[in-house]
Image (cartoon, rainbow, N blue to C red; front, side, top):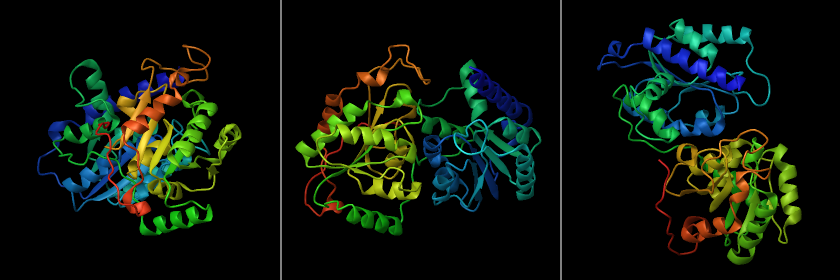
Length: 390
């Protein structure tokens, strides 16, 4: 509750700074910034959903330098974005889950460094108290703030054009009459990345003629995890009925979860959790036919590299935080679950327990799940469900 109160106060303060010091009428139509700073401090999935902002800023200002301020956990996402010229690291105490947040002393050094850059425009998609102070001290002459739009929306003065986070991020640009034709998150996979993935699959003895399905059973939030026994049952069905090969992915801390799932399985599966960097994981997910997993960063990463993605939701809102793309589906059986702690008000098992294995099977069948032609060399037609999250 204390953390929520701090977040609300930060939101209000950021909006107040915007209204008091960065009025829209000060933004001329012929404004052509030479250097832009975009601030997005929160978690991996959220940063991925913000990548279209950079694509659209580049289209609007083709000659500007685009710099990003983000946490170490998301840095590589923006370093890989083709339109970002520079990424500056700042580990906000409000969003830091691992490692040490940036100290006050280092934050002061950061402020001086940013002042030297002489930015013409700041686009604040999500910040913390320290960044609000930066804005208060007029780090840049011009600023767009998502917080201002959120607060205005809350009291009825403005309306977001849609529910999804990607749409709301882009609304920050639309408020300044910047066109936003690019709507989809991206994570660039290079030829070198693809070669690395191919070598790993060869090492794991993956048969290229069979479908490859990545499963991510973890999540930093316990209540967002589907039960191990259901992942095991689903994986056995995929192997027996679809001749699929199962590749479990995740971070090192999630290895015990995957070990439990493998122990419950009748069939064999491969576990590469904790063995890949984020870039390597992206290259592997790009190679897979399907990704199935809980609401998490890897789910958004799979969608960003263009892989068919099925996200499993208990807590959280897939209409706002779901994966983005024509090949993305979500499954949620209880839409009124707000619980993000360690217990669920609807029962000890949590709302994820209401998702059945049959639900995932039916989703796979409805999307005509088949191998991708270019990855397996087999001539066949692929039909993808047209449902998409926008």
